Amino acid sequence: MLFTHLATHLAGISRGLARMGAAVPSRCAVCHAWPARPVCDACRMQFAPPLPRCATCARLLPHGVAQCGDCLRHPTPLDACVAAVNYAFPWADLLAQFKFHAEPGWAGALAQLMARAPGAQAALAQADLVLPVPLSPERLRQRGYNQALLLARALGHPQVHARMLLRMRDTEAQSHLARAERLRNLRGAFVPDPLRAAQLAGKRVLLVDDVMTTGATLHAAAAPLRDAGALQVCALVLARTP
View 1 (cartoon, rainbow, N blue to C red):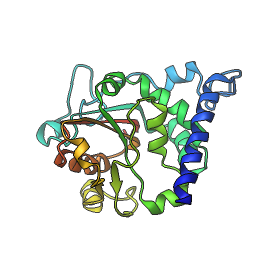
View 2 (view 1 turned 30 degrees about the vertical axis):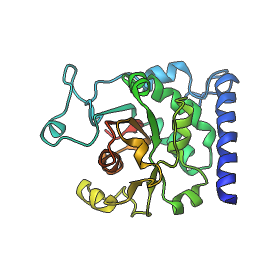
View 3 (view 1 turned 90 degrees about the vertical axis):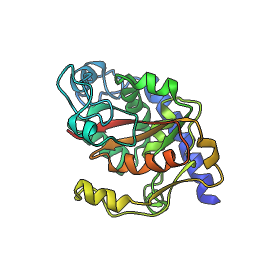
View 4 (view 1 turned 90 degrees about the horizontal axis):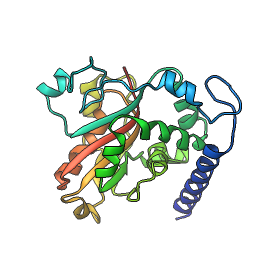
């Protein structure tokens, strides 16, 4: 109970810091120009240009191609997937600060990048429910906050639900695993809250996460939502690995 109250309090502080960060001039974290937003417009235009991506896995594609060959051959549980940037400089470093160095105030600036991505506004507008990809209880205790939840709240959708999708267990670190191993690692890791699963029936769900690598985590999260009767499951992520 105390942990839940503390997490709620920290989330409120984070939202306040995000609002302040959007309004108060500071140095750009990339080029160090001042005064600027946390990421200035020039750096955003240089390092976060709109790029053609696969509609269902957000992989980079040539212009004029809507879907990659892998998704055509092996349809995913996602109806659509939107990514704002590549997981590369400078976003990889800023994400590390956000996730691993107790800097939740980055949520507002990073969510602005997500909201500007091609397709993001349409995904948010059609979503009935926005669900952050949950952390395991162990990981949440270590970090103190779920970065996906902070991003989801900073996107401003009125129906963000932190506990409708649950992560039942901690899993082995995914970074060193191949895609097939990631899928096995995540099997059964996500379930809808049994007391609220009925609310998913017929709904359009938008999953929010910070980084997409192979898609294994998002696919493992989307599958039980579909099993619960979700009409549509899409994803919005900040960064996609090239």
